[in-house]
Image (tube, rainbow, N blue to C red):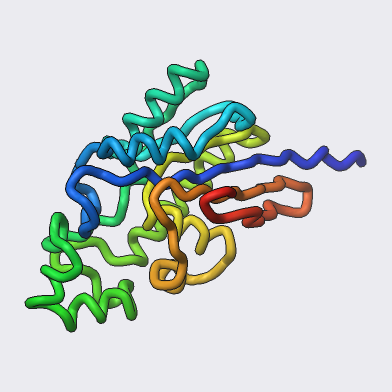
Length: 206
């Protein structure tokens, strides 16, 4: 019996650039990119990049650039709600300093174990990781064998990397740095022996 030829899927993950309003716990607040953010995103891609399709979070700081790039390169674009950022509940729109003024213990508890200590009214890291992983598996199967650009968020990239590497989402939330317009690359090989995932690169020049 002949074995199937392995299918390789490449997924590049691109975090959005700087949004208007500066650094804060933005979560699912729908702030647009600042001028600096637009420049960061445009600088993060180049003519040598080859993709077959673009995926994006529905939030404007991701979707607006994804739409621009899709039109410029004549690539299909799919918007996936499950790739939206983690919901920070009552903390959305606040800076770390503002939260720490009255909820320092809760903030520390979240970063220590966001599975057991979600933000007030927000999403726990376990639920967040599950929805991202489910969407990741669905789209990697649907787009099998293609080169994919996923425009999303720092939290989404962290828990997606946790899924790829087989570690807990919480461990990556607290330990992986994802700057604005950071790029990561994942290779997925679908073989007769199962699906193999590998992180190829992570960082500004990934």
